[in-house]
Amino acid sequence: MKTPFVQFGTSRFLQAHVDLFISEALDRQAAPGCITVVQTTGSAERAGRLAALTQPGGFPVVIRGLADGKPVDKVERVTSVTRALSTDGNWDAVRDVVAAEAEFLISNTGDTGYDTSGDDLSARVPRSFPGKLLLLLKARFDAGGKPLTVLPCELVSRNGDVLKAIVLELAHGRLDEQRFSDWLANEIIWANTLVDRIVSEPIEPAGAVAEPYALWAIEKQPGLKAPCEHECVLMVDDLAPYEKLKLHILNLGHTVLADTWIRGRRDPGETVRQILADADIARRLEDIYDREVVPAFAAKGLGQQACVYVETTLDRFRNPFLDHRLADIANHHAEKIARRIAELHRWSPDVAMPILSAISDQ
Image (cartoon, rainbow, N blue to C red; front, side, top):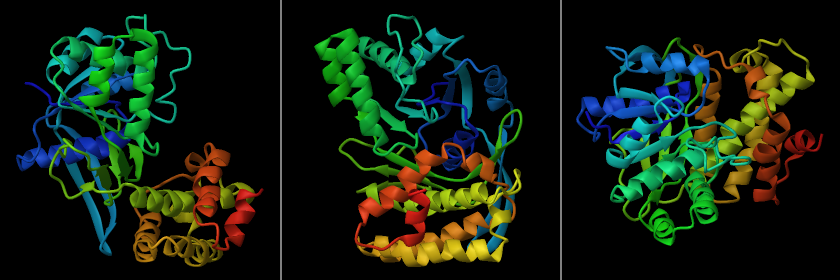
């Protein structure tokens, strides 16, 4: 069976997001086909996940939380993944699938997924994801060069533009073939996307626990088709408002709570839901939203959208079923403060932000 989707990454996020959406769309004949999942690292832990992703009957995604004020607690079976490969052990097969079958390439390769430092494109299998992608796209070009769409899901602003620039730089520097570079620049559609769903726990060997809320926003451009028809997949004219809402409301709220957790030397296992059970902490977060964050969005003409997203975010934070550990959120805390809090003030400098400034100035 041909698979029009080739997905680089085996994360629990992708299992509860892209894989689930395509599975649900396939049930309604609203997707072009199934998925080949490709493991891009040599992780032994994730190698065991590959076989489980294609097990008969699919893998479970548990959806738990509140939707429109009502509790949701259900299990979905994801059956969209029909082939699982590894770039370490199945490079020739991965190359053949990308060259001959793929219509969409999807990636979620983590915080350092675009790092190409120290890579060697003369190696049979480059170390970095962009290096691997370049050679796979070269194989497709050599096989006739049918266009395709790249849908990166990494949490990088303008991720399609960023990944395109990296791959083109590698091509210019290492492969020096103008026709191929022109094809990469003009025939491949590099989509900018935004993903939003809290996926709090893995299910072993494959599967995940996630909240009901989910969004996959994809910015329109000429020639770009939606990967599937699904209520959570939005084709939008401009990705920027969605990026700002997520970054400076959901992500900012997480960082504010993580900062409180760190400063207070609180329980190492404490979750978002548990810390918000403290009325003073909950009130402080709500004050930050009401007095500093929403006014910043209002100054940009997005006040109403921000109010709605704040309410949705607070419900998501209080999800009684999800255990989102603050210790996990606190990773790379200084970088998150700079991007989620300090950048908000730069974006809307005329709005007073005394509480947020105290956090970013520490």
